[in-house]
Amino acid sequence: MKKINQLKMVFDSRSVNESFSRMAVAAFASQLDMTVEELGDIKTVVSEAVTNCIVHGYSNTIGKIYITCTVFEEGVIRVSVRDRGCGISDVKKAREPLYTSVGGDRSGLGFTVMESFSDKLLVRSKPGVGTTVTIEKIIKGKLND
Amino acid sequence: MPVTIKFSGEKLVAYIQGEVDHHTAPDIRDAIDDAILVNEKAKTIVLDFSRVSFMDSSGVGLVMGRYRLAISKGKSIAVENLTERDYKIMKMSGIERLAPISRKENNGRFGDAL
Ligand SMILES: Nc1ncnc2c1ncn2[C@@H]1O[C@H](COP(=O)(O)OP(=O)(O)OP(=O)(O)O)[C@@H](O)[C@H]1O
Ligand SMILES: [Mg+2]
Figure 1 (cartoon, chains in turn red, purple):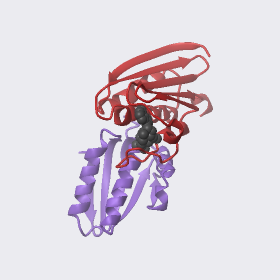
Figure 2 (tube, protein in one colour):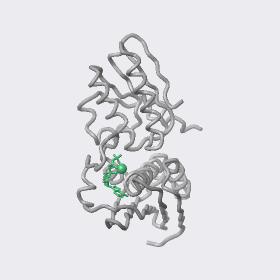
Figure 3 (cartoon, chains in turn purple, red):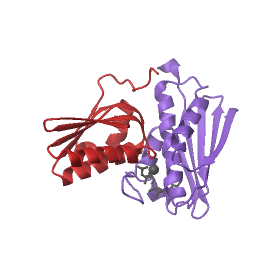
C-alpha cells in the first residue's frame, strides 16, 4: 500500500484526553471521503484503545500515549496506539469477549468493539514494556453509501 | 449537567447527555445512582440515550452497573433511544437478556446537525 499522509501525536494518559484524541484522529482521517458511520467507527475504535492505555497500561501512573495515523492511497486508514505501560501477559485471553482484569464498571468489551468496527486488529504486547494496538479500516466512503 | 432526571409515578427517566466514555462516566453514574436512591418509589429506571453524542464500551459498563444497583433495590432497568451503533455495542454484552434495550426511531445522532 502507498502512504499518502501521516499524523503522529504524543499526549499524557489523562482521561480528559480520551475525547480529544478520538476527535483529532477523526478530523485527520476525514480527508478520506468518509460516511458519518465510518467516522463514528474510527472514533469508537480510538476511544477503546486510548482508554485501555489509561486504565490498564498506566493504571497507577501518568505516562505517554503515542498515536500514529496513516492514510493510504488505496483508501485504507491505519491507526496505531502505543503505551509504555505494564503490558499484557496473555493477549489471546485479553481479546476474549467479556474478559476484563479489573471488573467494576468495565465490561471487557474493548477489544471486541475494536475488532467489530475495523477490518484488522493487531495487538503486540510485552509485560513490563508496553502495548501497541494497530487497527486498519478500509474506507468505502460516500460513493457506496 | 450530564444527566437530567424526570420522575413520574413509578417511573424514573434519566436523560443522559453528551459523550459517554471512561472520563465522563463517573459523573453520569453518580447522578443516576443518587436519583435511584432518592426516589424510592420508582420501580422502573429508564436510561434514555437520545441526547448521547458518543458512546464506547464505558456505556455498557455504565448500564451494567446501574442494572446491578436497580436489581439489588428490587427495581428494573430499561435502556431507550440508542443509535444503531450503540445498540450493537450494548448487544455484545448480552445485556438485552437482562433488561429491555431499544433503538431510536430515526437513527439520527444527537448533535449530528451541529
Ligand atoms: N494497553 C493495555 N495495557 C495493559 N493491559 C491491557 C491493555 N489493553 C487491554 N489490556 C488488558 O486486556 C483486558 C481486556 O481489554 P478490553 O478493552 O477488551 O476490556 P476492558 O478494558 O477490561 O473493559 P472495557 O473495555 O469494556 O471497559 C483488560 O482488562 C486488560 O487486562
Ligand atoms: Mg477496554
